[in-house]
Amino acid sequence: METIRLKFKERLLSVDGVSFFCVFGRDGITDDKIEGDWKTPIGTFPIRKIYYRKDKIPNLEAQIECIPLSPDDAWCDDIKKEEYNTFIKLPFEGSYENLWRDDDMYDIIIVLGCNDEPILKGKGSAIFIHIAKENMEYTKGCLAIKKEDMLTLVKNITLNSEIEIS
Image 1 (cartoon, rainbow, N blue to C red):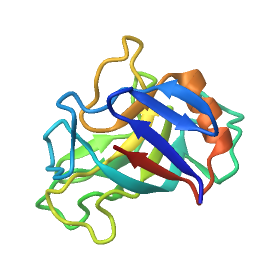
Image 2 (cartoon, rainbow, N blue to C red; image 1 turned 60 degrees about the horizontal axis):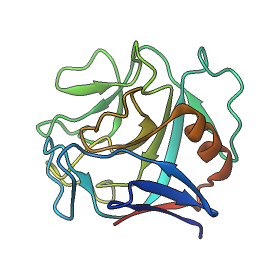
Image 3 (tube, helix red, strand yellow; image 1 turned 180 degrees about the vertical axis):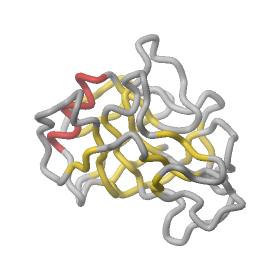
Image 4 (cartoon, rainbow, N blue to C red; image 1 turned 180 degrees about the horizontal axis):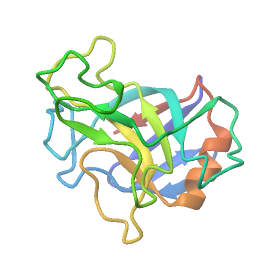
């Protein structure tokens, strides 16, 4: 199993000897993730799925199936809902993260298997690797890399890849 490592102090996401500068949660990393804490969880997480904007990236090269997003796609972050920490369709009665954005952040989303087997309410939702903002601003808890680095990463990962955050 291929492990992709993020070393928090170095702020590098490394795979096969290639490293990408990576941003993470504004308030650092934690081994006790709580919904809304702006921290990135520590641990080793499998790759679950890749979603992307086919209208912006028509020919995404990847070793695994990439699922096109549509304007009604979202991710539930509402701890009161049964759908917490799952992909949902809009409209939805409750809190959610819209996956169809006006900016480029979610043009490619790698979903990490974090708090999903089993899902524990309030222990974090929507932990992704996504495209960083141009200013490389911190995230709410996800990992983010430059778009060109994301295109390289997506080409090289498989469903056997794991992300280790330490």
